[in-house]
Structure formats: C-alpha cells, structure tokens
Length: 413
Image (spheres, rainbow, N blue to C red):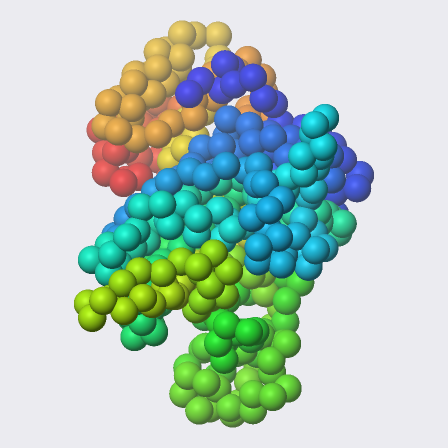
C-alpha cells in the first residue's frame, strides 16, 4: 500500500473525551474513527489488524471442530422471553418497528443458536456439534470511556457446543481452553494472559476468564505464585486456595478480560426443549458450552500493552503491515527508483509493505512510522545508498543498522 493513496491521515489531536490509551493512539494513527461514545469505524489500517486477529481465532476454532456460521443481529422478542432474559438483561438494546413488533439487537446468541440447531439435529448421531460466528454485538454500555475495551457496538467470536452428557462437555471444554491459550500466544499476549477462575453462576462451580495484565484493566485478579493461574476478585473471598494447584500465596494485579468460557449445561436448551433420542431410544436434553472472545477488545488490549511515548508497537502476527518502507527524497531520482524496486521486491516475496512515498519531511515520516507501530522500518536515503543498502530498525528497538539490499528479506523474515 502506498501511503500517499491511503485516504486516512494521522492526527495531531484526538477527541478530548477519549481518556484511554488505546482510543487515543488508534484515532491519532488513523486506525479507527469515533462516531459516538463506544461506537467506532474501523479504517483501512485498523481493519487489517482486526481481520488478522479474527483469522487467528478462526484458525483455532476450525482446529477444534467449529463450523463457522453467521446469525442475525436482529432478534425477535419472543425468543428472549423464552429464556427470561428480555426483562432480566438491563443492557439489552430493544427496538420497536412501525408495526409494533419488538426486537432486540443481539448482545449474545444463545436464544438464536438453540432454535437454529433444533431444526437440524435429530439424533444422537448428530452430536457433538460445534458452531461459531464472528459478528457485531450490541450492548447498552453506559460507561463507554475505554475505547475498544468497552463499546456499545463491538465484534465478538462466540462458539457454542452441544453435547449428550457432561463428560463430553468437559472434554470439549478442555479443548477450547487450550485453544484459547494458543490464540493468545499467537497474537502476542500469551505471556501476560492468565487463565482465571470465575464464578460459574447457576451453570457450574466455576467458569473461566482469560485476563491480560494491564494497568488499563477494570478487573482485579489474584495470581497464584505457584502455578500462575488466577482467581478473579468476585470469588476470591471464598476461595482461599488455588483451584488449580492448591497454592495459597497470591499476587493482586489489574487486568483486562479478553475471553471467557462457560459450561451452560441445560440453561438454554431446556427452555427450547432441545432434545434428541440417545442410543437406547430415550429422549435427553442436550447440554451446552459457550466460548466468547472479543477481537475488537483484543485489539484495544494489544495497544494498551504494547506502546511507548511515540506510539503503538504491534506484534508481528497482527500488525497491519510487516514493513514500513520510507524514502527520504533528494533532488536526484535514484532514491525514488531504489525505493520502488524494494517495494516491488518485498511484495513479490509475500511481505506486506506500507510504502511512505509522500512528499513530506523526513521528521514527519519518522514520527508517523513510530505512531503507526509497524514492526520494521526500512529507510532508503543518501546515507544508506552510499553503502549499497537500506537502514533497518525494529519498532521496539532504539538501534538501527544498514543492511545490504540483497540481504533485506532474510533480515526481516
């Protein structure tokens, strides 16, 4: 992508009511645009990041047998009344059309997936079954001051599993748990994201959250010093020992919840009478698991964790581009020609490049490169050409080095 053709621009100022680091940097760098509190447009650079996060999630969901679908965002009232959540959920967006029909904007999809599955699953031979989607959700969030961490409209991956018995649910639950660990490792948050025990509510003794350490977090977790598994603040008072290893020495930290998994059992299948006949011919109510992970929230979390006073520092796996190529022009044309050759060469090697070919000062280009936070900055200038190479600098390093153009690809891959 040529930066001169990118319709979005970096900004010097951000909305005064944006207090979170992720919103300030993402808006300033032209990744997102604020429409209203908790509602953002994803611009070309931001959408590239979001899609990369989604694709890492999608790959892991497919690996554990998930079948991808896409369900509606508009939900009829009667489905939510069946489970009692039409009146119970205080953050549910409710709308009424001109005919008087009432609907909800979906914050989650249990009420939709169960009657959908009911149409297709008829026998124990169809079970177990796993379906997921990556879709826009809506919640009436009145405290929308955390950028992508707490939105009214946001992206969510929700996976639902269907089982004949608790043993099968337990086995799949463990697979999903391990899959989440893989996801956070791949997106660069693995070392600071803790499996966290939370209340299971009416479903089971425990559910699990995935909490990423950050001072921007609104949650408090208690990390076991023995095994690094955590307990969230809400259940810590009644849980004196680590449920994982039995340790009793904990460290309190602030964290951002980036994912959660629940054993729903029959909470949603029972109201819809979702049953099949087992091998003995007996009718059994299916039990369920639910596994949520927010790509947009993950994107905001990455920015909160990986930044400095100059801008963002993207992990390579989710960066909008791998290389930020910068030409420092002079009166001659050689620099331009060399930069064009490098741009074409990198692309032919399958390397994603943002090429800053704009007619602005070197200082402005370097400042924008630091703000945008692409992993490698490659500069073509008089200085580099004199020694037959380019200047390469990693975004998270203070040092740069001159690398021969013929060795550039091996240096950055």
